[in-house]
Image (tube, rainbow, N blue to C red; front, side, top):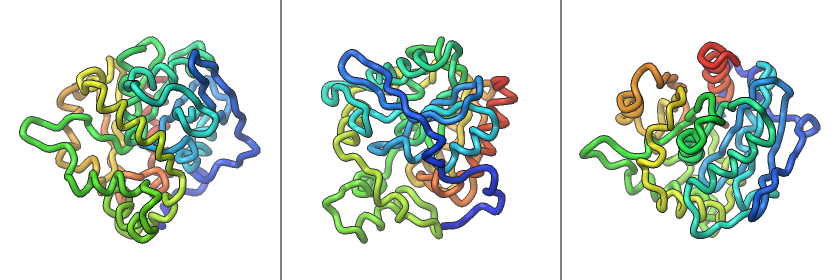
Length: 285
């Protein structure tokens, strides 16, 4: 994998001995939360489709070093998180995150959503603006395309689903991972593991059951849109669309070079560099 020369001290794998866990009770289950750091500003990170909180491990040390407290809730069906998996919408998944924030902090949190997680983050910002100080979108699809455009190329959609299809041969899955998630020269093998098919199916159905306009405007929170320069799922032709819809005063765009839709394992230090100054300068955290 290509390594950013400035990565040292900014990103790296989390030391499990420094991570604590907390279970937040819910009526029909509970949320398993990984916790790092003890800062006053809470940052809650929501992972990609069918993947778990471990995906954020490369950026957690840098956020903690910057004085932030980081919470990584596991989605339903992953780790120790449980709850209804069928017949749900993004509003149900956002309510899980709301319960986590209410259990952990008296102040609004920063919500970071990677890929699919961006839809949950935006839904939470819409449903519970009192809990959200700001939203960080990481390699995020806009949710709906500009008029006359198609959001996902059919071949890219095929690769999104094929990447986590554990019934396929490894080489086929690597081909899908390269096409949908990783920039050329970056190592896709790091995402061969970490897929949760039941959660992926549940999240896909929840997205389909939720009108895009329920969350598209992201409530009224300020937004940091961290884009990957070589993202095939959220391509450059849509790069400015969310900003034009929400307004330049609300949306700050940072483009990370030499990264695809996976982004977190590809350029973790650059993601930290994008997030920390924005949180400090825009939100005072």
